[in-house]
Image 1 (cartoon, rainbow, N blue to C red):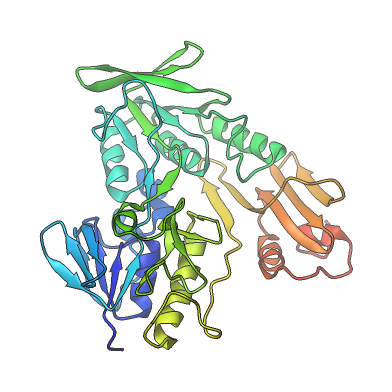
Image 2: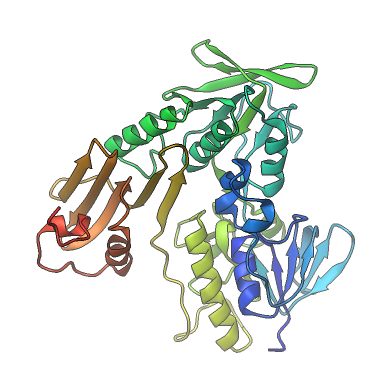
Length: 406
């Protein structure tokens, strides 16, 4: 393949494309591409950093190279070291940045000593060096990332407080019952959980954090603060190049931006009004784009052709394993909140801490949550991802892997 393909970003999406095609990959981080999903396991000491490295790409990766400007007319990418990289096709896989909440004592790019996001391997290694048994740590954000960070810090022996502004943990993925079980499990690991709790500021002494202030006036002593308030697509490079940007870089079904020679995939991309921010969609987008680039003729405009590979969206399933004396597995997909007229099946085993629920709308599986027992998750995921009519059978069979006899 003679087309010069340049990929900006060495995360999940960029690395996957580089496994499929000969590309020049510009990775801003100094580390070889790694599995970001496993960062909490590195922080907890379960895995060494090299264990989470992604499989090798077909071409060497240029590490520690930051792209700063795109010249669309010349079709070049300018890097921070002054070098220029020419392209025939450019792929933006710039990922996302952690959201920094608007707190008193948290202004500008320079964070107080002891305050860290939890997004990169460097973030993880820095936190690992700071945390030791007895250190007081506050995690701000009770979503998937915050829960993962809290349990990892607890595994290191820290005294952990997890604060969540919403009513419950992982409220985007879990229903009320599942979230309550998750909270019980997190608290069993020694984590103190505060929900409906808004953080208003940070206290510092000599440039180092000493406490977290809550809106109700309560103060939490802290030597380490982890910011896990979500992520935001990295779009500055695309925006400055004049590409169409919404919440993410806007792409069509061929993963093409408003410039026919530039594509975008992964956390930075917005397709059909949706930004996914998950590994599964990033991998699927990279695979589709690899097929697009292998089969397309040189582009003349940004309109999709009538045939060929297409990306039509991803039905993403969230999975998480929480460690501890009694590990807890969870999986969530789709919309687990029932509407009027929906059919719902729930199975709860209080002695085992297991909970399973599915929501069926008409003849389609539209969502579900499983905690503790994931034996049925494979069949459920296939039924949901395929979006096909369910067979005429009792709904209970969806939640049991033995024909509904348990």
